[in-house]
Image 1 (cartoon, rainbow over the protein chains, first blue to last red):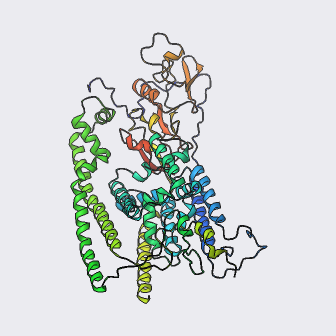
Image 2: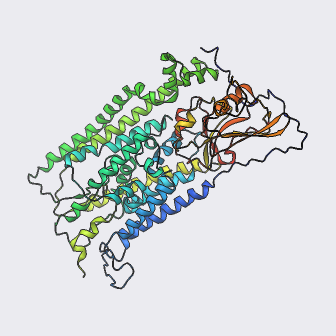
Image 3: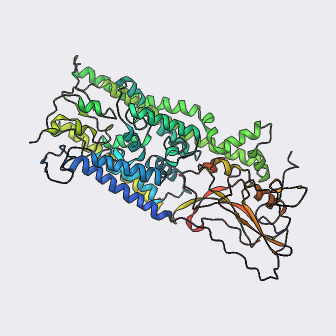
Length: 428
Length: 181
């Protein structure tokens, strides 16, 4: 089989001499253009900051929004007709979908930047561009001060889902609680595959990129269309149940300096904000009917705390035991398996032989890759175990709520609830 | 309530601190860069498997055939232009190597022909490149046309490239051209 292969021709070989033209022929000048990518990527960063600023202004400082305690609407003022509306956030969403989505074709995004950052931390040969770093860090910094203002309308994925959202069918708390572990599992696998230089799974399985690019992988476009259709009835399904960056932002916005409030006035428990929230982030009042003895509660919390490391170890070992299977995602491991089992001449195998690589050299590489897989699946499994443990712990904690309260980690600052709260319609 | 406030402040400081630490480590890394990185094919490694044509996320691949005139032999019987073992050497479609008719040639002087690639028609299949590198000087080669490339965070072709020829390159050397034989 190998004998009939065309030998590898590396570069130019000059089988034929350079022609000596007698007619005064001149070699044509061909210039291959390079787009001024740097300019656009800095426009991205500037727009990211400006748009997050607009959302912060709209949610926290807009004088026309009643969430400001110094609420004093000026009936003749700018935006006066739209007062207490989320018009600014919608405007940001539209700009985001058009610019970040369709014009910049959704790349590079903060969600995918997680992988670049992981790769930069693990692979010294990888060059992390400044823009990617900023796109990753800025929304997290913003979350530390103002919550998930990035998700509100700046992220083109969130914006797209929010713009088509009409109704919010509620999933039971138990189901959505269990599903909320998925983003963390997704994050753990994204870290595993990025750190082992296998694949950027967040980019590979990005549901909306095909829509923004008006083309691409059919399966992913169908997945994106289904998610988009779903988001008409269920608010932001990607943000709620898939987005790994949203999970990170949620963690940071838990300790944010300022948190979104539906209204500065007292809550009247009318449930309107709860019904309209696309993220199901507004927790209804809850009476703790069977108050537990404090000591018993503390004991249980401590037990779960002790069990947390056990969960982590179990997760780590479980995933590490599967690291051999997982490592098939790496190109070299796949090639090695193909070399062992290929019956028909595959392009990969042919190219491998054409390049004159030896199987021993590849085997050494594969063993190194599998060793890395073992280490990183320990990390990823540990992370999953940790998240599951904390989730279970949080399920055991019951907190009494007298009014509707915003869960800062789930709230995306979309400002939808402001319009609906009857207390906001009051003019002092 | 005081206890909760204290915990919240601790949390903020912890989150802010870890963010600042990670940010500074990454900033040190990022400051070592020499500008943007772009995806590009190394023609020395490319084996023309044909996946560039089908795997690019664009409807028509951003990979195009480039032609180095300085390397070309200007042959009449061109391995990239004609298919192997054609019966008659004329420009009938069945004799052409290029499936889209993107290679055009112009008579220069006896016996030389100048070949040019119509980038609009080229789909990056690499058939001509294979022909030229097997029978000619290897003046045809595949490159990612940077003005068409979307610059995906991770090039989809690079993940299936059989020879690992697609790598990130600094913007200063956005093309790996063949200039001299």
